[in-house]
Amino acid sequence: MGAVLAALLYGDDWLGRVDVAGVVLPAGVLMVAAFVVLIVLASRELCDVFDAKGVVVSRAVIAFGAAAGCVVMWVIPGGLDAGVAMVGVVTVLAAVVFISMYIHTRGGRTQGAVGAASATVFSFAYLGLLPGCYLAMRQLHSPWVIAGVIGVAKACDVCAYFGGRAFGRHKLIAWLSPGKTWEGLVAGVAGSAVLAVGLVAGANSYQATCGLWIAGVGGAVIALVGQLGDLGVSLLKRDAGVKDAGASVPGFGGLLDVFDSPILVAPVAYWLLMVAFRVG
Image (cartoon, rainbow, N blue to C red; front, side, top):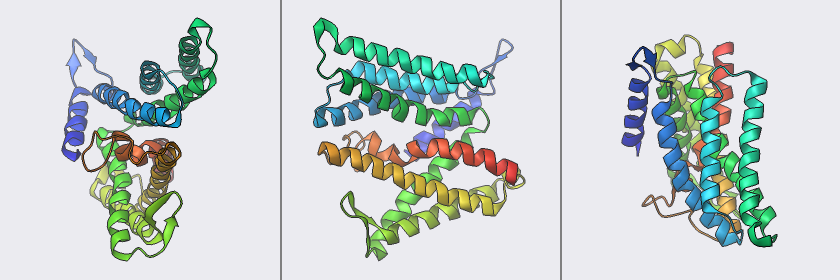
């Protein structure tokens, strides 16, 4: 998965410098295409969770709404006025909700319409707007910064797993995620902070504008938010009575099980980078 991510970001970086008849392709053109594919696949897993909970949804509407939310986040940073951008997001959301309610009320039906609309709004925000923050980030930074953010978020998962296995004694939230421990969380946060410092130290252009102490604090914040994202998906699965969101990634579960932490991290990382380069 790391190799696929690296190839994707390298291709996106290359395309962002291609001059086609005097026109340079917009930054993130390959990323948005890949994100839409992943979002559509992940939406199927989220629909399975909804089904297990008894919420009847239109899979096509959920996939379309989530993809639309992501794409609109890519379009917005392209120099639009803040007010226009905000209304643009709301307009797309309103259109998606209207489509959902129309589909679920055809034939005079009313039962399940509110639940379906609520699930559609959640999908639009969770699978669309949150990952879309990476595309907004891409307008301001190289794709390798995004790789660093995702790497720092996942480093917490890896370090927390091994730290918990080796030293875990005290359960973090036993009723929600029995495998997580406080010792594992500490190891995960420390691992993310160290990786963030190492990445900034190795990138001279970023070290000049972002101090190493800021990188360490930012890495710790990303780790903690990522763990909240992990626990959030655990809550959805436990409420629906399913163990994994899917089985598309052998050994991990589904796409939601893999990307649960980076998804919630995206908007936080956007603001952290903005603040870091102003403070540093």
